[in-house]
Image (cartoon, one colour):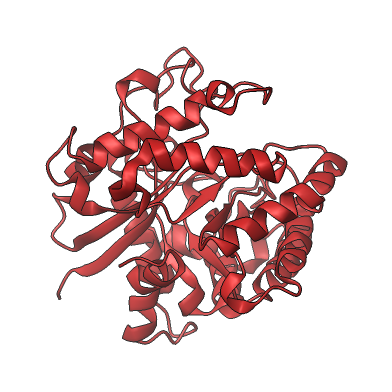
Length: 356
């Protein structure tokens, strides 16, 4: 059987300089597994040992680097995210490995979506200058992580507020997408439902060619419950599952929304067992995503190297995740054709991120 062609729509990278708590607040000592450089050569070192994996290219997603409280000069308080763009430029220019430029198809850096639109415009100008023309062409969208906003009122004021909405419309007008990071598991279903309202507002009255594309990360981090399950729906936390299903239906209503099959090793109560066992655990969630979005709006993402932390095979966990997704999609209940599978593995990412 020929190897499955893949565009990995969700990987993270960082150099030695930011592999610490100074560069990333979440790299807390001691013994933080991710507090070391993670470069494309490390990602491909895992893939290269598997003949059934053919990665055509990857999409880089921002890593929540440190930045100061917005105040005054954007170049000063946003130094961390701008330095991240300089790192991406060095990567594309081949500083770390000769094939980096070829394989890094798209970039999704950070952007200050919580600030007034004039601040976002100033930041985008600085980011473009840092990137240079060659790298700026690969910037396909931006992300501002919303999942850490634990206060429902604060979250609602932000995503439904005028500044955030104007910023989304600015991204759409300029041809950029917005990656959405929300979290049912740790925050609550309200993050998903409020974001669904924000998506609806951002698209209302906007010409189709200017609508911002929303790309939802990690199945919106479902709450699987704390029980060690066997398989099937009998063991589900039904209330959380039903609430998640309702929110996903709302998010899928807009055609310009996509979902990533990614990130579940960080959410599942256990990652031990066979691929079939793991696939059975997540089956109802993946089934619902496919029902709501369809294969042409669902894409594969590894969430490397974050998947290594809770993954079943340590630093080789992303290829296990690939096998997990393959097992999850393999079943008569999905009735997926080879063309459907091609969309999930590489065509959807190509369309959603407007790759060449």
